[in-house]
Image (cartoon, rainbow, N blue to C red):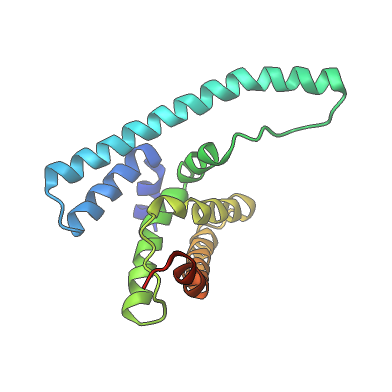
Length: 173
């Protein structure tokens, strides 16, 4: 567990590129291409975190002035889903959501428990968010991991549930 915690403590800007490099290699990408993809994601995360920092530095005082001028009692700024996704992946547990989600998806497919192949790995941010929220509220790392896993499984089963409707609507075979 200490090794996993050390790896998680590297942060999303370091950990996600490493995980994507490994994932790319597993899927058969050439090392140079997998490395470039990982580095690109790392640079993107650093840029996104810079933008979030600049936005909160700029919007924070403006929002505070609006709260004071209108007499509101607001304590949060809605930064939208892209920033929420970046924040979710940037938490201690968040960057583990992708390997957990992909691993569980492959396992459930092999066992025949789902027919859904979730190829949009960036949408695992929802799982990262719930797992990170549970970890932040309880301080229990294992419970946060469990929450990520349960959320992923629910997504796969919901995918199976809505697949016939989507297939019919879009005319998929």
